[in-house]
Length: 151
Image (cartoon, rainbow, N blue to C red):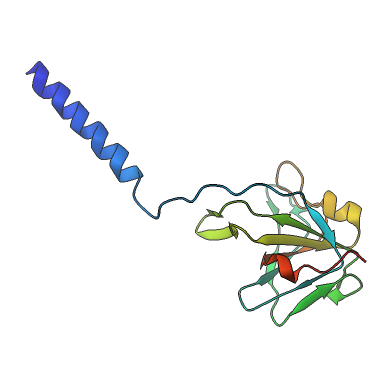
């Protein structure tokens, strides 16, 4: 009986371990790269633009508005998009794919950018608790050759 129980536990452990490993094989992480401040970002058909609104606190909850922005093919310093005058654009390299809640937010080997009113607002747009301190645009995925020079 003791041997049967041990064999059953071993089989159960193997089933759990192998079932968790199913899915697409994960590629190794790429080398990280420093963030870049750019003057413009060209967007292609695979790129998405989202307007992220400042978090609003209510009595018992808080909410952040996120709005898809269509028809934008270029974002440059000086542009006004959805009422937001762009004064700074920071782009971050994605060394791996990542998603949350079924939505992909990192694309391995590509870039994602934040565009906001000023460099300071972009640097401090998201608080440690996830609250959005300032309105900004999120752009991604973006290929490296779509990043414009610093103004």
